[in-house]
Image 1 (cartoon, helix red, strand yellow):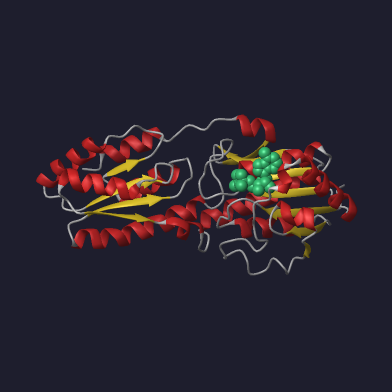
Image 2 (tube, protein in one colour):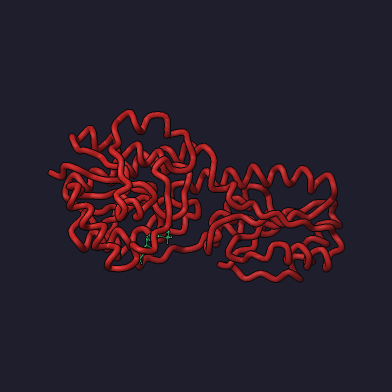
Length: 320
Ligand code: ADP
């Protein structure tokens, strides 16, 4: 039975990462393991920035956004010398397994460590929900709710001035936040890179719906498209309706995690330690059909995830 495990957060932070760290720590302690918190992603492993986590050191973090272990990108770890340094550090301190909370890049690092004998289990943590093997990533629900709250506020002012509000939400190259926050806030149009769009058609729709009395508009743009200022400018030119762009940005990454994020983070953290306790590594914890399961890391990285085209079509069909 494995005696000491570590836990780290890597890549972009996401609300709910703390709940996962707490679940990993408490599950491992309840199984008689020692738990080490590796700080600032793989940097901490290379530099020895490591602290012992006790049941009390993870108290009072479940409700907090961000990550108490800090997170970072580590370029050195992408080299074989960097991975060797990390493996040496693991051997020196008796670290036999690591739970890596992050995205695809972090899982690639976890696969490299697993190949060198350090058991690693990944937990999907990113607000973007852009990890193919899983229906859900920790932080996604909180980020969508934050975006929704912001767009509701923008709607108040767009309504008062008969304006068009072009809102850019995060998601990196995926439009999941845009589509879900878009349908939830009643956006007139959702522009994401997964679906073709035509600004002439959007302008036409705005003018047509104005005839029936619609006076303000929300146009949701996903981060991968970018250019929200340019889109606002073009729509204003084409319609004569005043349009303003707002980029929500990093506000979507912060805040207290929602119930969904805390629950799933707790389930996934618990599941990851159960795998390590059985001596199983090189896996990613995932949600499929609403249940927690796991995949081989390489298999997980090669999977493809369908876009929510049905949801996108419903959103457009009812937005006029
Ligand atoms: P995310 O995990 O959110 O996708 P990144 O792609 O920035 O974020 O990856 C986070 C960290 O994971 C990187 O800074 C690096 O330390 C490690 N990493 C990323 N890609 C690789 C890779 N191909 N091989 C080894 N480690 C990697």
